[in-house]
Image (cartoon, rainbow, N blue to C red; front, top):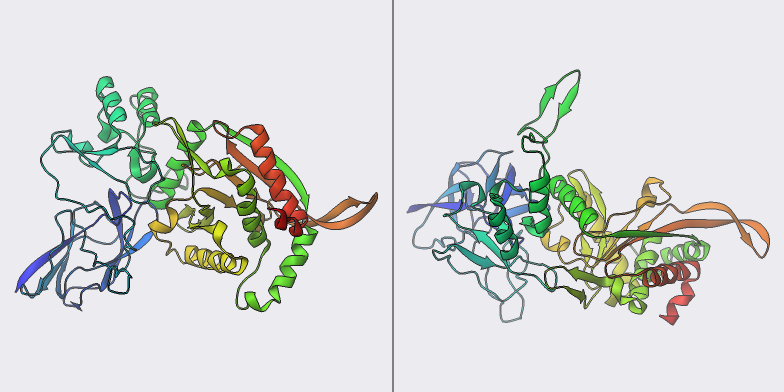
Length: 444
């Protein structure tokens, strides 16, 4: 018999820390291999962690509500030493290899492996390169600061040029706020830190504190913190341009009603968003630059091989953007099913990190809030985002007569570094034309 400590793992998203949201077990409980023992909130979502060995829970080492770094022991288990499988050196439980049927057995909450690369025990060195899971097609090298750096930067992620810049400026990366994907510190983060007031106080206290006449301070963390950092990084790194178009979508609304009665869509929720999503994937064939990304370090434009269509979703924990992988290759019923599942999972707060990684184009449906349109901020790592406004019956001129029609407004924000006005306008006009006359989809 022996006691095994399960340490907080990196669940495959370049995780640096996570909050213990709720324990699913208590001391004295017996657990089997891969039983879910805790729910954590990472910088992207809620994740259920399975235990990598079987035995009896002896102690919960971290209380609910506390945020701890990756590698911190969080639970102790009394195990049968003969059958125990200790965690790997990097604290990530071993994920079984594919079985004879070609399927990959995975630990609950970790998702399938997205690469064949295997993590090796770290060796003493100034820094070691690591890869950020589920990153865009072209990902620059990122390094993790080691123990010979200041204590505050022990888990800092930064690219070599950014690390050199910080060193030249005499800045400890451990005190720089990261806004890059996966918590990576960017050049803009370092430059912003230089220009920030020297005596700036923290924006929020470590815990809710009531002050003044009814003022309440709430700590910014988890999904909301990452959303805020991502939006600032996008707004001040990519030159945004927004174009608008108002469209008669009466034909689309008629199509939606027909699809609701189609047996292929039985038990599925059909909405105008489905037709917008399909129109985006079709219009992207003619203007593929909207499904690309700007690689600043390599000075390259990366054209994505598939449209991984993100749908912005407001959740109690903040804004997330899960995406439908390969949306452009799906049939309409399959796309509808994927949309339904995406929305349901997001509302439950169960969207996994892998479902939010690798997006290439985003739709934000502000119409569900009764809003006509807006100027959306591009999701970091993408080139464009489409805002879909409310669909309302309005007076419209048809053959010189004013008649009631279903009208909506579309707003496209795009990165002007790689998408010029002609390309942005062409794409937006193509989406509008399909919504105005769905039969035009046959031309794409």
